Image 1 (tube, rainbow, N blue to C red):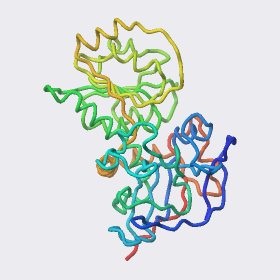
Image 2: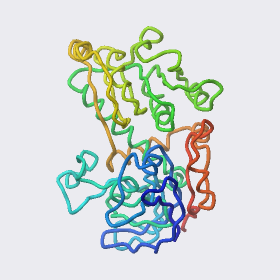
Image 3: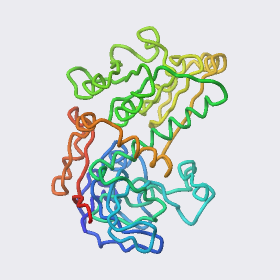
Image 4: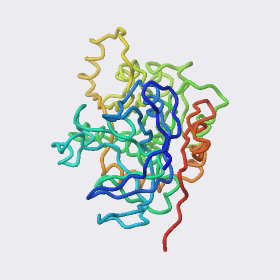
Amino acid sequence: MQAIAVYEGADEPEIIDLPQPEPDDGEALVRTLRVGVDGTDHEVISGGHGGMPAGDDYHVLGHEAVGVVENANGTDLDEGDVVVPTVRRRPNGDNEYFERGEPDMAPDGQYHERGIVGAHGFMADYFTSPAEFLVTVPPALAELGFLVEPISITEKAVEHADASRSAFEWNPESALVLGNGSLGLLTLAMFEQRFDRTYCLGRRERPDPTIDIIESLGSTYVNSNETAIPEIPDAHEAPDLIYESTGYAKHPYESIEALAPNGVLAALGIPGDWAFEIDGGTLHRELVLHNKAIVGSVNSHVGHFEAATETLAALSESFLDDLVTGVYDCENYADAFVDDNSTIKNAIQFSEYEERR
């Protein structure tokens, strides 16, 4: 079968041939339909994030996938089920986080992530997975089910942000999303129904397709080249929730002062090392005197994938059409990894869905 992988020391992915995998007990064989490409894939390719599976000098990419069960192999799944795989797997035997159904809370060293660290990903004609990590989705989502994974990331982050405010009556009215990439735009679309006012910070200049999407959602675009985060409360308002998806290390610290009293920052970006000065006293006072909170969030679990499935089904077709800028077959896989200002969300198609009767 064909797979898309990066070899150790290489800086570009390539097509490789691998034997079709055989499912172990408790696993199902899945025929891959589509796999999304995101920033993490680029970081894995460059060597800036993740790690090769033990014993291999190549890494099959991809962690945002949708497929169809080819061989249920005695599990509770049925052949023909459309499924989305979660990302984290047990590294070597079980541990308390997986036992509790909370692999997303496991610390480094106590998990593998398909296509990211320690385990091969889903960019292949077929993959196997324990049935417990396969979430069934409606056939109507067979084409766009690869978006369930990124949406699940926001489902978790917002759940944890809400939990940090659960000790009192919190009625947020405004939200600011930092970052106008595909994750930021998906999050903004999710926030459309919950918040009265939403804002999205980016550094792109007009004309730009992401700005068009932001404004089509009824949100306000904030150009960071003109209005920095500390200036947002005066230029617009102090948001109740700030969602950081940029990985720009200064943004969380700038966000503390920008938050409204009782507000919460959900930090999701993963920056590289960067030493810089901050006014620690001011930030400490802001947190304490204004009851603000910071929540870090990474990955997600089955429950978040299930919630994301419902969220995706409710998003407008026009928004999704604008978001997904390219779907490429394996022959043209390299085009899916092009990252320019015309690209928002790309995917690679390995096979087409045909509903079984």
